[in-house]
Image 1 (spheres, rainbow, N blue to C red):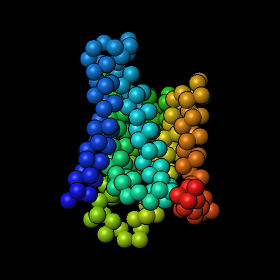
Image 2: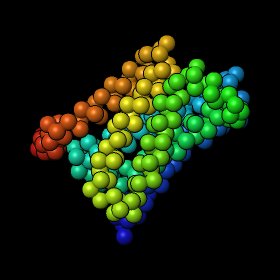
Image 3: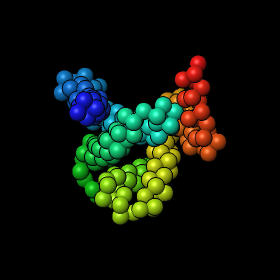
Image 4: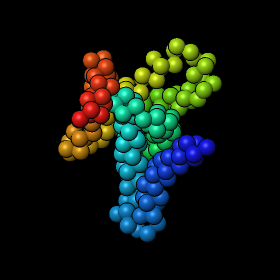
Length: 206
């Protein structure tokens, strides 16, 4: 019973932590503290939030191997769904604040800003992974489930490309995210993946 209560508190803490930035950004907009373009403020921050959540989600597998703590595996689906939620809000912010829900503008926007197409492909990929992250889908897909969810790394590449296209005038921030992504990807290489449990053993003996 105590363990179940601990896991519940852990899940609630993750929920509140993921929700907190949205509350803060909404408060900033409501109090005219988001700058002259609050719509773009929300669009950019929610998009970066989605990237951070995707990086956190993908880091949980190597962290689980390194520490063998079950808590990381417990919240992986939760963080993945939050990533999808942020990505969806990012798209809705674009539709509302940039397009003004005028879909006639979308064609010209896609020509001028092809990174929107890249972002939409990434969002569709996240939606597919979110829809298949439940037990029913895992049972139905069987052995195909793991290969499907490995596409999360391709989605990360699309998100980084999308972000690169948006901020290519200032590469410093993008380079930080790319370095973190490269480190996470490196942990998926078989030699590194096999070495993670050994590192945990060495640290525990130190």
